[in-house]
Every structure is written in structure tokens, then in C-alpha cells.
Amino acid sequence: MRWALVKVSLAVTTMVVVAFAVPLGLVIREMARDRAFSNAEREAAAVAPALSITTDRDELERVVASAGSDAGMAVHLPAGDGQDALELGRRRAADADIAAVRKLGRASTTGVTGGSTLLQPVALSTGKIAVVEVYVPESEVTNGVGTAWAVLAAVGVALILGSVAVADRLGVRMVRPAQRLVEGAHDLGEGRLGARVPEEGPTELRLAAVAFNSMADQVVQLLANERELAADLSHRLRTPLTVLRLNTASLGEGPAADQTRTAVEQLEREVDTIIRTAREAKPQTVAAGPGAGCDAAEVVRERMAFWSALAEDEGRKWRVAGADRPVRIPVARADLAAALDALLGNVFRHTAEGTAFAVDVHNGDDAVIVLVSDAGPGIPDPEAAMARGRGSGSDGSTGLGLDIVRRLAESTGGDVRIGSSVLGGTEVRIWIQLDGRAPATGGHRQPRRRRPGRLAAVYQRSRSR
Image (cartoon, rainbow, N blue to C red; front, side):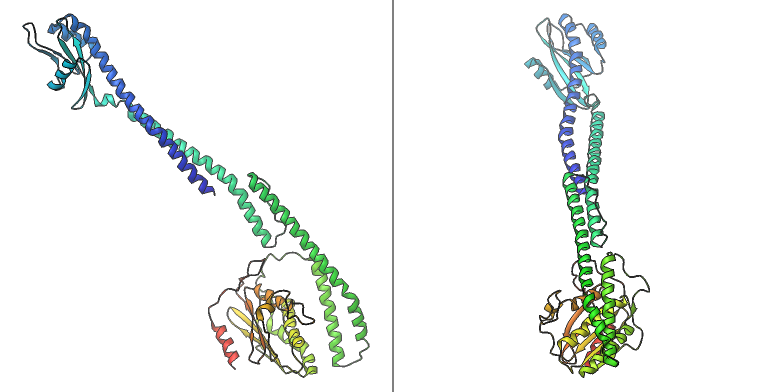
């Protein structure tokens, strides 16, 4: 916008300067010409009284010398009364031009070498017509024209530069509020909810700043309301959890009882975490630093140990591959555990007892792939299952499990894909990027295309086994 205003001002001012300076320059040139020939007419008029009185050569030479430079003036007397034609001074005009002036009886100008001449007819006492020739050099015709044109050009350039400077200042006055609005929107999009825009500048931008600040206030209020609602809803779970914890005390001893008590304790911790997070939640604005994250292999082994007891009760075969060595990923331990629990919980919830499942971890230079596959009936519509809040439509499905997994992967720049597993059922592939390229916050991003690499080849070989 700033440069557009400067260009428009430059174009308009240039056209105005040209429209006025060119005609004015031509007028100045004509004025200089008229001034030069007016001086020539005055010189010729100074000789006319003497010609009407006498035609004596000596007298006329004195008159011509007193009127000006005899090198620039000539007098042409016609022949008559026994006298020959007399010419005083240096002649420059042609005979035809002199004869035409004498015949017509009015002054005229004609071009000669180095300038022009003014031919002025003068009536003599004898009734004859004499012609006074005054030479006007070209330097006198253009005297002062170059200086005047230079002054006009300087004034025009000054006007153009001044208009450009004014347009630039006006552009800055308009662009700065717009830039602050863009920066505020960027900060708000990155989660800095305290971002506000100064309400200044032109009326339209000031109104836009007012609307932006009002929107930011509403976003802060809505997020606060959502956190309070999440905390309140989580707090309501304490009563049924307390009942469950009391009932587990009557289960006695045994693996199943211990497993149940452990699950209830973990559920209580998760509820407490949700409440604390909702009460103290602040926007995530900075990516995880070096050394942050967890060991994916350790989390996989831990969660599989938890789910293995239930798998044995239901007669399910399971296996873990690739979790025997440390696999560092830029994901919080609790987030990865929640994602694995969501996927494994779906396996137990949506497949029949005795259905086998597996978890595979593939480690590469730039990414880690976690595969959770089962031998169940599969997912008829994977795209609908990935949509937040859609779920499978069955009882107990909130539609948030796969969304939790998706957000985990996309927080690292990766993605989640659903397909068919080698076991015959569903396979959920979690692609976790290791190079730290996190997507922009806000909205659902489209997974970026990747060129097949070493990790993709390993993944394909694992599927072909």
C-alpha cells in the first residue's frame, strides 16, 4: 500500500508538472523573442526621424552610431533625384526581402545566418521609402531562456520529490496500523492471548483494530469459560470415582483386583491432572526444546504391560516389536501414553474377545512410526473416523480418541493414517517428525507430502512380513 501511494503520487505530480512546465517554457521562449525584436524596433525607430529630415551620408552615419551598434544596423536608401542608392552599415538581408518591405510599406522579419533581421520601412521627405535593417542575433533571442527552463525543471523536480515524500509519510501512517494488526493477529494465532492492537490510524483501520481487540477479548473469555467447564465436569467425576475406589477394596487379592485398583488410581490421577490443567491452563506458544520429550519404546512397553492383563483375560494374542531399544521423540510422556491408551482402548472396545493386536515401533533418522494394528473387522469409513466428534457411532464412542492421536502427531509436523493391517483388520499409523517442524496453531492443517525415505522402506518391509 505504501509503495502504491508513492507511485500514484509520483505519476500524478509528474503529469501536473509536465502539463504546466512545458507550456510555461514555451511562453518564456516567445517572451524572450518578443523582447529581442522590441529592442530592435526601438533602435529602428531612433533612426526614422533623421531619415525624414536628411539623407546625407555623414549625418546618417552619426545617427546610426548614436542609435546603437553600426555593426548590427544597416540603412538602405533608394536612388532618386540624381542620387544613387545608398547603403549604410553591414547588409545581411536579401535584395528581394528589402524590395518587398519597400513595396508593401510595413515591417517584417527574415532569417539570416546567425539570427534574424528586422526590416523597418521609413518614409523620406522625397516620398521614397528607405528601409532600416536591424540584426537580432540568435543569442539575444534565447537570452535567459535556458536559465528560466532550468529554474522550471528544478521547481518541477522539487514538487515531485515533495509529493513523493508526503505520499510516503501518508503511506507509513496507513501501513503501520495495518502491520500492527497483522502482527496482533499472528500473535493471537500463536496463542499469545494478551496480544492487542493500538486503536489509532485512519478511521477504517482504527475500527478494524477495535473489532480485533473485541474479538481477542471474546476469545479469552470463551477459553476461560471452556476451562472452567472442563474443570467442573472433571470434578463431577470425583463422586463415582470415590465409589469405585471404595468398591475395589472389597475385591480381595489377585491380579484382576490389583489391575482394577491400579486403573482406578490412574483414572483419579488423570482427573486431577485435567482439573489442574483446566484451572491453570496457558496457551502453548513455544515448541519443545532440545532434550524434551520421552522414550517412545519405554512408554509402549509400559502401556502394553498395563493392557496385557486384560488381553489375557479376553484370550487375545498380542505382540510388541521395535520397543527393545530407546526411541526418543519430541512428545510428552503423558500425551503419548494417552494416545496409545486411546488406540488400544478402541481395539478392546470395538473388536470381539480373542481378536489379536500388535504394536510396532519403527525408528528413522527424521521420523518415528508407531503402528497399532488388530485382526478385527476394520473401519468402513476411515475419513469419518478421523473427523473430530464423529466416532464410530457405537455406544461408548465420543469420537475424540483418534482426534487425540491426530493432534499428537500434527504437533510434531507428522500425521495419522488409517488403513488395513497385515492381521486383516485396522491399522493406525502415527507418523512423528523428529526435525522439530511443528505446524502453525489454529485449525486443521493438511499433512505435507514426503518423499519416500529409508524409514518408509522399513515400514513397507514390515508390512510384507
